[in-house]
Image 1 (cartoon, protein in one colour):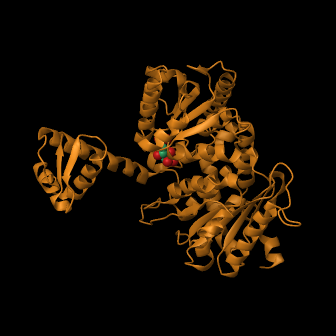
Image 2 (cartoon, rainbow, N blue to C red):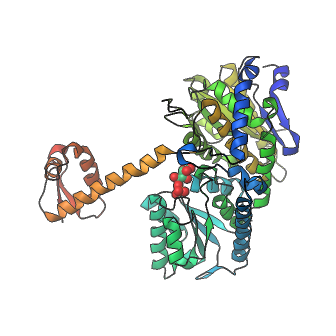
Length: 524
Ligand code: PA5
């Protein structure tokens, strides 16, 4: 790696305290020029998207997350007003909660219990962890982001005795996601068990007229905030989904929005070599042959950014992981994303990255500022932060010497602005890359299919329970049950369902375990 190549492909944006280094991706000298016509098409598609075109054709929707941090960009004044009103509402609710004007059954709210999943949880979790400080945060954030009963119990145990000062925020764009609905019902039951009225402790963030919206209206919840159909779940961090929790935690949401808006400006330019989102998209294209042939490992050397890889995993994989392209061709696209944090991961999977199967490229995130105060020396002339950077630089070089490519994003510090910038940078890189590979980045048919598949399984489970109840204390094999229900091709599924029911006090018991063909199940 030469100093001159670094100079050529290191893009500092001083006003953002940000830099992108693509010098350790081994593209040829002519690559950027060769790709330029396609980049220009991607820029045009992005311009049209920002101007309000139907950029999500399958769902017939506009894609407007860029307007959230610059409402004047919205294609009509009604949308501008809606975004501005929502922001005002978020600030008012926050002020009222912090002042104790909106309070719980047992006094001012101290905690938030956020109930949501996917795009309705990952952004708020990332931002809360990146910018929070337990000592200074105005409220503590807790999450139900799954339908795991034990997971919810653990969270509720932490909140034991505090629900009367815990504000529940139920977030679902569609308002019909089962995991979130279940979380809401479980929370409701917990509040009731504590002698508290759930509606007086609950806010909904959802699409107007959704099931959740109707519940919130009919039960007279504290308030509701909008989720618009032109903001996708995974790009909703800078809508009420992310802004309300962040504001309640005490984070400066104007600074987050400002950072995102500034990165939008920097990544709106049509000059590829000066546009970090365009360069990222191009590097992904080069490194993965434009078809996801390599995985993206995200390695921030900073604990605060640990959840960034999880957040990006959804943003990238749910957006790009598509079976068909925009012309209906079968393409099986995507880029797999995983990661955690450095240097910790050097003691986990980095061994394989350095020496094992070569199926990845790395995105390092380097944070220049070590901590807010001074550091002790842990060795003569060296601080813990020096070690952290040493591990990053050493790993980057060792990987490159072994033919493993990497990108480095450098930020000065983990500030609200920097977090807004990172979100905006990757949102746009994903959009531009989607144009390069001609897929719709803004729908998620696979997620919807997953929801439907679960419904079928639950219907079958209900059928089995009802059936067994008609024959109490009558031991039956899986095959007997399948036959009686005319579900012969579902024997494995029936076994799996029964196997779990027997350990959950659901009135189904097992008298003989093996061989499984002879296992006998009966109801009480
Ligand atoms: O990004 C997406 O669209 C999804 O991950 C959704 O956020 C997720 O499925 C949750 O959906 P909803 O917000 O409608 O409950």
